[in-house]
Structure formats: structure tokens, C-alpha cells
Image (cartoon, rainbow, N blue to C red):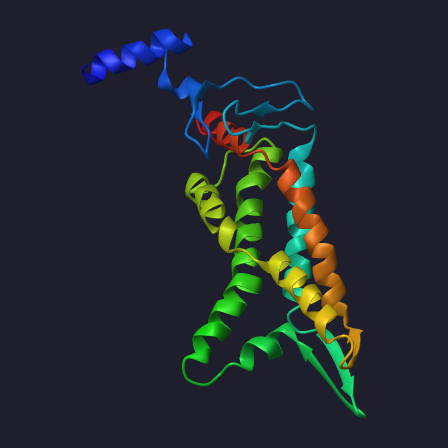
Length: 220
């Protein structure tokens, strides 16, 4: 079968006139004819049950607000105390920046860079890029230059943004050392706790397909 014959077969199978009308599941690559569901409804992959499209009312404004809050919390938490520990009359407190800078010798420097990047730099960059992409769309303006590249980068960076994983890992570790020392939670700890909740809500509102469609429509 030639490429032209194969394309024609796809057109007939899905009843479309252009390949732009198709969408592929990001997990199993199943093909579907893209149709915007009603607000509050979801389009789900029949093969792997991944949510493909999930439009929500005024989602853009909510995502902008959440992304701004996440950016502020992440940057602010760098310098504020994360934990206070007291053992046998000795006390110490540390921030996330102190934790990263404590690995400053030999190969451990790579761990310091990775910790700072995954916990602070990459999450902050993702939120800044989301604001860059969505702000003009929400206010009905032409997307900024390279908006598509910026949004594609946010998707590629998503698995490496681990601020919430860091917070959950710390909580698990604290359970294990709670009997050995008196532990106090600093402002940065509570910031990261709030950050975990915001990440969950933000991912629920962000519909990747809707953003791509908005970028395509407003750039023409």
C-alpha cells in the first residue's frame, strides 16, 4: 500500500478531510477523531483510559492563578527554613538551599545540581513558560513568539519537575526519624505542602489538547 493509499484509508475510516482532525493518545498512540466535549465532560482513550480532552469553564484564568502561586511558593521556599531539628540540647535549621549546597565535594556536586534543578529550577521554569503561553490566549491576544515551542518544552520538562516528590519524600523520611530527634517544621515545609495540593489541582485543570488548539486558532 502506498503512502497516498494509506492516507486515503485513514480519511475514509475516520470520516475526515484532513489529518489535523485526528489526535493520538499520548500513552498508547491510539488514533481518534478529535471532537471537543461539552464543558465538564471528558474524552477518554478506549484502550488505556488516559484522559485526552477535559475542557473546564474559565480554566485558563485558574491555571494562570495557580501557576503564579506555584512560582511564588517555589522561589520563596528556597531561602526560608525548611526544618528545625533538636537533639540532646543542640538545634539546627536548614533551608532547601542549604541542603543543596551541603553536597559540594567531588561527585556529590552533581547531586547538588540535580537537587536544585529538579526541586526549584525546573518547576519554576515550567510555571514561567505556562504563564508565557497562556496569558495572551486567555486575554484573546495573539500568542507570544515561540509559544508552541515553549508549551512543548513544558510537556517535556513535566517528568523532571519534582518539587512535590521532594515534599512527599521528606514527609516519609521524617516519620522514620521522628523518634530520634525533636523536629519542627519551618515556613518552607508548609509552602511545599501547599505546593503539592496546587500541583494536583493545576494538572486537573490543564487540558493539553485545548491549549494546542487555541495556539493554532489564534496564530492564523
